[in-house]
Amino acid sequence: MTLTPAQGAADVAPGEPVTVAVVDGKVGEVKLTGADGKVVAGKPKEDGSGWESAEPLGYGKTYTVTAAATGTDGKPVTATSTFSTSKPGKQIGVSINLVDGETVGVGLPLIFTFTGNVPDKAATEKALKIVTEPQAEGAFHWFGEKTVIWRPKEYFKAGTKISVNAAIYGKNLGNNTFGREDKPAKVVVGDKLVATADGGTHQMKVVVNDQEVKQMPISMGKPSSSTPAGTYTVMSEHTGYTMDSSTYGVPTDSKAGYRTFVKYAVRMSNSGIFYHSAPWSVGSQGKRNVSHGCINLSTENAKWLMDTSKKGDIITVANSGPQVLEPTDGWSVWQMSWDDWKTGGDRN
Image (cartoon, rainbow, N blue to C red; front, side, top):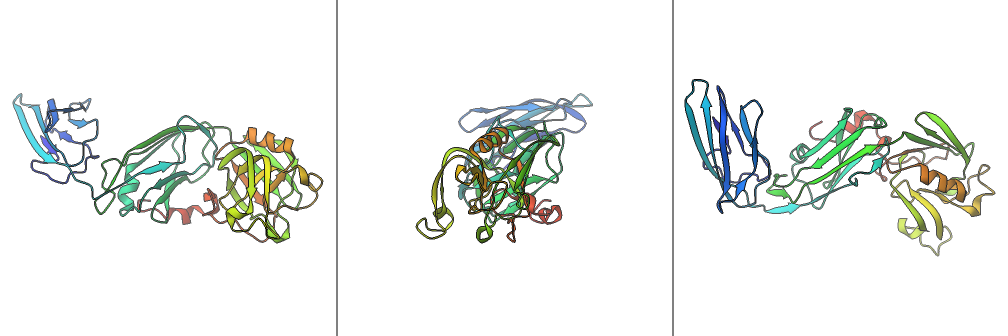
């Protein structure tokens, strides 16, 4: 019978499980207690080959695990281990771009944003649990020291169930930096929606579950502010939104500046690209590109598309001009090839 952590172990990560492993026998009663006498919950394996704690430990605490087992020869065995957990030098938290229970689009990347730099990326990736049903091949990619994104190789299938748990509490993420708390979420992938905005035809085609359901006239960025071409992912939806050029570096009182209220707006990038209602450009929609870079739609069509689309849906922009969408702009992860994507993770 082997107890982990072993007798006298120090600086044990409190997020790692306490385990009892039995060979040539079956585990019996196991009790894990803190110095204050409080019992820590755990459960045996169904085949009797071991036991594992079922709740995290505290920081800077002392615990004792006492276990009994019976060998295949019928003889009883007991073992005890007293150990102490780490005191974190620093704690960092994490947020994820999911709301528990929501329905998302087929192109949604899973984004983990930490409150501080992550010293050990491989250990951190190991703590991020992602389960999809049906199974989807995917990989991590780091953007800087605080953000890691997981995306599938191909779009999720409609109906996929995604379960995420950023199980970082008590885990050593490097250099005595520990996770502050776990962040779980479960979501489901809805209908496959892919919209294509064509700057040559000035039309947008909306395809749902591989069937075209609507075509709408649009106006995209004029030559001096062309809409970057590429594959965008819907980030957020807004009813009542002020489009303000100063948010991406263009003063509102400059020649190219603006500050305009729109009824419906859906964010496609961090650099200020939206599709939105633009009643003032209806005369140009379907004919010419006149916007500051966004995709202009009539109020009716913008409302229909916002009601139909959701976070994580795909919008592709083509024939719009020389600019190309950067994969670091918003959730534009599909701008990076799969081979390049896989090079950005420590455990891929």
